[in-house]
Image 1: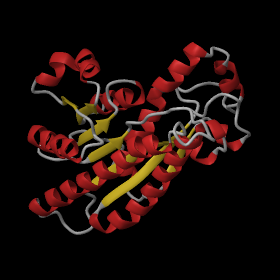
Image 2: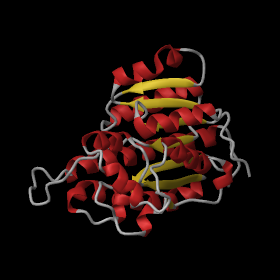
Image 3: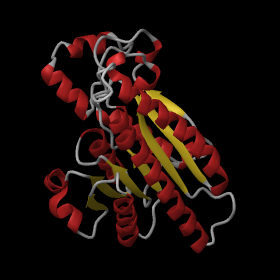
Image 4: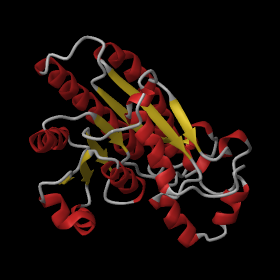
Length: 270
């Protein structure tokens, strides 16, 4: 089996910064056509600029993906640019601290909307496009039509009151992954997730600026003794998107340097 994704088309959400940007850039470097999607149009423009307006493998799309019409427009823009969608990476995510006993500030509804429902609706609509493309191309039964990869967090398995909303949304993403994997397997679409921790995400960078002491506590609570670069997560995304993972679906792969194997450290479970 090949780890190659050359020639495939991917949509990556949350692609204006942090892990989403790192994943999208990595896929481009490995030969994929990539639609960088994010709500932050100014940041997309700063990162991509003229590159996204050329005839090359990079395009950008700015919009609020909590809106179904925006999702439909994203898919149409991707198909118009590259004719198909083979890979979806739901990397858009938000993290807020919860006030456990304050229903107005627990963040649960907001994070379910942003982290779970956006990924669910985009996955549903992308899967339909993948299936339609397979039918038009008269793809043989049993052929893989696409790969959907959800970015989750080890917070789904950690009990931390201040991460109430984030943990609930992450656990829901994991279960969504399993359910969709079973439903879409007969259609030739694989669905997997990556639960990460101790990886240098944009939210972790912000936390480290505010709390520099977190760096030592995170590294000390990670058996491999360090915080991973975003590229290390991107490599796992490439694997899941490639034919090398052709018999892998419904799995939540933990990428955290062993951190979830021991007691959680005092810093947030980024």
